[in-house]
Amino acid sequence: MTEGRDGRIVTFYSYKGGTGRTMALANVCWILAANGKRVLAMDWDLEAPGLHRFFHPFLDPGVLDATTGVIDMIGDYVWAVTDGRRHTGPWHLPYARIRPHAVSVEWDFPDGGCLDLVSAGRRTSTYSAQVTTFDWDNFYERLGGGQFLDAMRADMRRHYDYVLLDSRTGLSDTADICTAHLPDVLVDCFTLSDQSIDGAAAVAREISGRYGERGIRILPVPMRIDEGEKDRADAGRALARMRFDGLPDIPTSRANAYWASAEIPYRPYYAYEETLATFGDQPGMPASLLSAFERLTSLITEGEVTALPPMEEDVRLRYRDAFMRRRPHVPRPVVCVEHAPEDESWAQWAVLLLVAEGFQVRLRQPGEEETGDAAVGEAEAGEAVVGAGACETTGRAEDAYRRTLVLLSSAYVGSTAGRARWEAWTSDQSRDAEATARDLVLPVVVGELGTLEPLPFRSVVNLVGLDEDAAAQLLVRALIRS
Image (cartoon, rainbow, N blue to C red; front, side, top):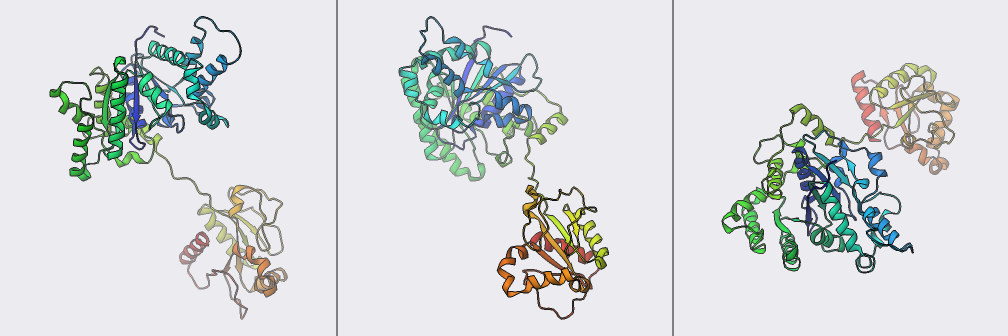
């Protein structure tokens, strides 16, 4: 790897959450890397890390989970300072080396480009305690935290063309590190609400006033602009320009062009998953989110990088789909079909119907163990009994939803075991004990029952006299709803 680069460190900051800050950073990273730049994305939002989610199709989760990050680097340094040994010379430099903590995004970027990610830290059981109990004042005032951060800054600039830091929102020690100590450029993100504008502008003025000697270039960036309320949006734009008066530090003649190009629009499509607009948007659409991020990249790089290079459309669409969240699979209940031997044809019909609907189906006759010869993907028989009148469970997750479908006919209620079940369901003395069992049972009438006491169930399905299609629809609908 080429050494001796003089990279720029860019912090993305927002006073309030919900600006789309992290998404903007991730897209700018990708545009830069796609233009042959060596890029590092670093997640300093320690309390709510999420930068890695925008790259998940290109990351090995096992490698990411096993690799240390920001809080681990700082923790290792603090441990070394306090371990009682005498330190001389630049002993701290090895602790500030960034590349051992970086995970590479798996993509073939052109012209030597790369995109590495340093996470907030390994998400172990102690991560939350590490973050919430860390004493940043002690780190700075007694443990030489400043020299550590300076060394980290120098190491990052030496190995990368651009380092993009995702800062925590609000006012905090870690936000100060990202907005004042480390960056060359501060992208100050805000929405057009009063609080977001005022908070972002106040931070910008403080950085400009207190750390002017650092020469940090401050770029106010309005985000999530919704043109649906144009008059209110225009009023917000005017207020923002007033609050950020003098920023960015550019000639007045260029201010209108800056504010027009810096806006990031709101697009509902991106509200549901962490999707990169570099894959979600078709290139060349001026009003797209991708075009806005290209303009932002141009502002950050002062015109050095202005656009995402062309990508094959089938490649773009394939990876766009990889970002999309799929509807969670909800397993169908395991169904035990209980029937008299004389109703075997009804039982086989029910099995074929329910298996086709995605249920696991098992068969039993009154007083016998269930069998699963006709079922698809069935579970193994277990030991625990859910309740009287229900099939046995296996102890597996799907058995929490197991139901018993009882095919009722004169043959069923005329059998000894079937009659015993009927009496248990209808007996006043047994009702409390049988309540759980009744909740798991769906009676299905498939033949004449004669004059019997009504069953105490919320629903009873009567298939007598229906044609096959009507019977199938009624049974499946009742089973799903019950």
